[in-house]
Image (tube, rainbow over all chains, first blue to last red):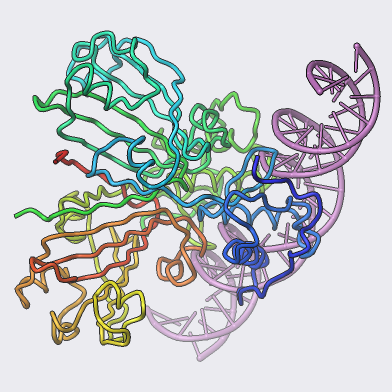
Length: 256
Length: 256
DNA sequence: GAATTAAACTGGTTTACACCAGATTTATTT
DNA sequence: AAATAAATCTGGTGTAAACCAGTTTAATTC
């Protein structure tokens, strides 16, 4: 563990000049933000505890927490339950048009990707899935749940659905690797088209638990449908990201 | 005003069966969410006041507020300062690859777009802007600030920078219309390429005030650089969206 | 030294007030 | 009827205390 817990209020801590805004919690926010930008609080570092943060300011804990929530919404800090608040690492840049898969683009940005297989099984198609894949309700589908990390921090959980007709015995392969790779090398399936949707959301129980986050925290839902050259649905992927882990970047030519 | 203030606790209000989770505020959250999905609380409708919401539950106001913040983060409700909490309208779908401009794609989705010019003037290029436009620091640039609405709700504020060399006397035109239109019809400039970045952010003082929001609320920052056929920067646009107003959707062919 | 246990610490949640300033409504005055 | 003033309602912010349940650390035991 690189980040140590603060046993005492750090000596370098002092109240930096705060904003004009009279709202106390914003002052506290600015103070902490300044320490982060100053480098006093490095990436991944642990903040002083809420009760320690109170001492200098004379603020109630609720006020301190309001400031911390604020910073969390901004993506500057995050929390580990009942452990402490930590400085967020910079977000990964995600370009939906350059399709290379998670493992590739994370590594390309000098970060360390990791994929963990949570579950893999065959299920019966629900109404929604049936529509997506163009199969009958109840038809067999593979369902894969994975958790993915950047520099050992869990950043997303995903549920992937795949049509067994295209990829028989898929579950027997190593699914903690890039699925794109497996599809290409074992089934000669290449993704030709992607349909991606993104929307801010709240993390529900399941996702939150998997990400070791508090349920209800804001996240980003990325829905992705991949098609092959024949227009068949290769992969239907639901990714729940922690909101501070990614940044979207698109570079596109405007047609006609 | 379509939405009336609740003078008394609505008769239809009752505590719906809530989640298993013991956390009280999540129960309150679910209860309100259920009322929204039931249709008891229609789009744009005003929720009972925080203090009214207390009565049935026996919860403290802080608990009620925790539930409301939760719903706000999820995009289900939003607030008008010191006026009340309202049910959010559905988000607009934004496809960065289909570039048609705000006015077009909002209208195409059956909603009513509106643009309001806040400010238009000539400024001296800052260091950052100089890099973007490839001009010297201090060089003249047009700066346009606008506020845009969907169905009369302010959803974004933007700051646009344009190079006067490409568009002399731009400020004399009607800037509350589609800028794309103006560039095309008066200057024969067509956007050929767009570079778009999106990231969750916190709304700062300026943006928040312009959107009549509380500063610090989560938003979505959309950065857009438009290029013409010669690769010149036509437009540099910074858009601050309220986080619940849009959903991103991309449909792309995987090249190479 | 390793495993276990106990104590200390951390955030998580909730209660109960209190006061403020802007928004809204009502009553009053012009 | 319209303009104005006052009362009321609403969210915004802040304080002070508690208690809980995981995490972490320190002490103890094997």
